[in-house]
Image (cartoon, rainbow, N blue to C red; front, side, top):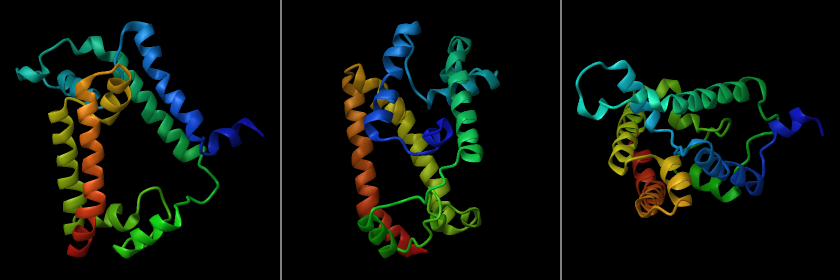
Length: 190
């Protein structure tokens, strides 16, 4: 198997999971750094906003490594999407397909359902709910929890932090409630 074929294919959970998990001890050993993505937005705002907002008053330059890390993720995502695309068709389980079709999702051609996240939905009622309200709630929840899923569920749980366990349980509960209780009703609105 060529290296490009290996990179293009989805990796099994028992390979990808430990590799993601190894970022935690690697960052701790390299400089006592904490893994997290959402804090990058705070660093960018602190660097770009000279206003005296207390939340942005800290030495953001000490967190430059985090911005380089996130930039690397963006570049990696761009390269993977444009040059290392998986040639196989995206697969979902038959039960998931049936559940999604039952609530009106019909296009399964990409990673995100085009029925929900297509650009032509951007200025519609559906776009208002999924893009604006959904984005606001994700941002609010991340700020309220003091971090996102990567910071709490990968870094926080691996370092046995109680608040990260609570936050991760809330993330999971919110996902289950949204998927099984709210999404079918939201889809009926449009």
